[in-house]
Amino acid sequence: MYKTISAIIDLYKPKVRIPVSKKKTRFNESLIDNLDYIQRCFDNTADLTVHKMDIGGLRAGVISIDNMISKELLVLGVIDPLLNNKVNSTKENILSDIKDKILYIDDISVIDNFEEMFILVMSGFAIIAIDGCSKMLAAGIQGYKTRGISEPESDVVQRGSKEGFVEALRTNMTLIRRRMKTVDLKFEIMNIGQLSSTEVCLCYLNGMASREIISELKKRLNSIDLKTVLAPGYLVPFIEDKSSPSFFSTVGITERPDTVCGKISEGRIAVLVDGVPGALIVPYLFAEYFQTIDDYTNRPFFSTFTRWLKYAAFFIAVLLPGIFVALGTFDPEIFPTLLLNKIASSIAATPLSLMAETLMIQIVYELMRESGLRMPQPLGYAVSIVGGLVIGDTAINAGLIGAPALMVVAVAVISSYVIPNLYAPVVVLRLLFTLAGGIFGIWGVSLLFCLMLLNLCSKTSFGIPYTSPLSPFGANSFRDVFVRAGWKTLNKDTITVQNMPGSEVE
Image 1: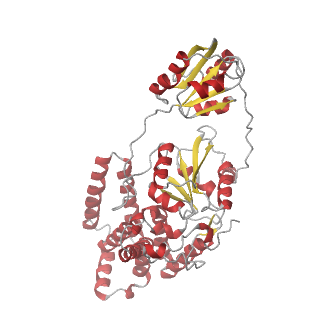
Image 2: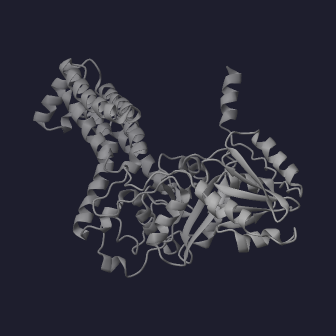
Image 3: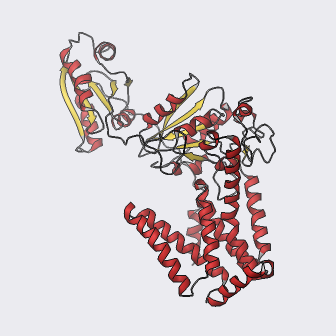
């Protein structure tokens, strides 16, 4: 038992990061030796192709990965120009002559080591190697299939753009560039992941984003020693500030390029990950969970009303089941007489306590939701609808659960969908508040709510208080929190990260 507990404790201890050797393996001047080394490293994989030819009396080879390149560009832009143009250059100048005078490709770079060559060839580049040269050319002829641009299913708007991010990093960069036609828009690409070598792109406006935050973000990204990066969630724990544990994330995520453009125009930094149709946003504040692009396309009075609805939905989704259980268990006299009679008769007709009944309904709903998400889409809809109707109606008729408890949980669950980005923390907090209300009553709900507020106020996002501009109070930024001011007011002074309270990075 002691060994098991020690093993679990050691598993969750912070891992000591061992610096990975970044020694580069330089190319050999012998073409045969270089090709042999490449084929040994790839272990003669089926999708590695090598086209051998003579260029200006020298042996050469064009290396590529099948289905990662455009075969049309390979033939017309690389192989055909190399075979049909005479090259009268020395070994020292042949690469520069090919790059400047022969190839019809824009994205060409000179490389001198195998590590960089492996990353490029597996990213859709054609590598040109010539006998007697200790360097190679990398020509970008990417041609792998990508999904078409469509509206994101998880972030639907009424009046905004219908375009969403796709899996191709360059396409996502283009979607941002189309909306921000300024030379101040900067893209910086780095590779993360020892095995996947995933491209990660930082996107920000030069002069708007804080240089300290940019430097700190680069430092945190460079310190990541993961083997693979397949989703933004892999990076979030390494990007967040080292503060107290919390259910709420200080890193935002969106699938909409117009949302990213709006955030970077305020001085934020977007992190695009290759292969993922989304972007991370830092710094990110708690109030931004209740803002959508529709808030800025509708009239201010209606946007303000919908924002109040979102705040109300958050508190209903988190607190309503817990308060209902607390009052029904310890203080039933608070309910109106007619409602009290209904609740009392419902509790008397069911075998479970009010707390157990409410928890069971929530767990059953989450099971149905999860099964509906994982099953094929047409079948998932049927499972969700039929399961909800049949199980709910049958359970009430059988006397296992009461209608008041089912109604309370249903209202709380529907409210949680008003703020979809907060669904995960809301579900867990709802269960905790239900337990606190059933065990300690309204005092347990109040104490847990104070702990939640304390946790929110203690968090920071790159040195910026997570609850800004509420705490500490910022009058300039407050005009876009509970009340969405008109564009004439919002446009007077741009709200940026640099002039937010507490924007100094620790």
